[in-house]
Image 1 (tube, rainbow, N blue to C red):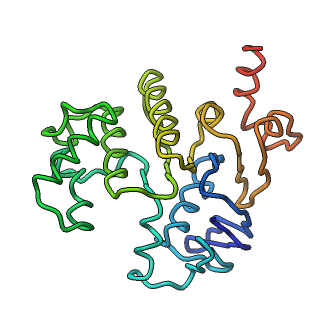
Image 2 (image 1 turned 135 degrees about the vertical axis):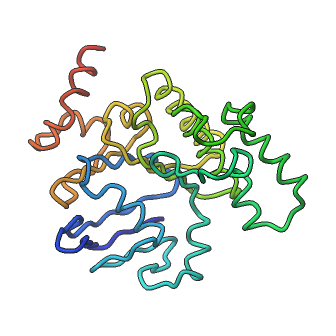
Length: 249
């Protein structure tokens, strides 16, 4: 379980998160919604211990990670498969070496075994022919799929974390990534947190919705509660979704 207990965080003088509290089970499918720059990615970084809160506590599996050292955070981070915005591939490495990177770091296995696993992962995400390409040669959709393969390379984890996985993609590739996220969650039997400002992406994938506004968590609820919300800022944020849902009925 992930627990945020009255978490505050600032970048310099700019308060990004103000008193955030919530609990999340690893098997949930959760969307963190909000405007750009509203603290969504900051939440992911706090979960992983990449940054530390100014105030408040964060617990992962009942372990308070707030003051842990980098070494102590390693087993915490291994509980998650992480796909950051834009994929964050290493530009100087071909696809197969990007996917192999963490396996080399984490496991003492021969190259032959590593490359076999790499091929299996790339096939699993639908880019089997891309292993010798450089990141700059990949389309946006392929880039995200390779990033997902690399996230899977760390082995069995407890939860996927996705940061804007469809941002900048055309509708066809966006839908492919949505289908892949759902397929992987079903096959692995674990949940995910997806950070997005595209409400319809979240609607297709998630069962629980958290909305950040002005640094605060002002909504945490189900699909039914989301479309019936009376919160003005949230109603404005999801107005396109409401139109699509109404239109499809």
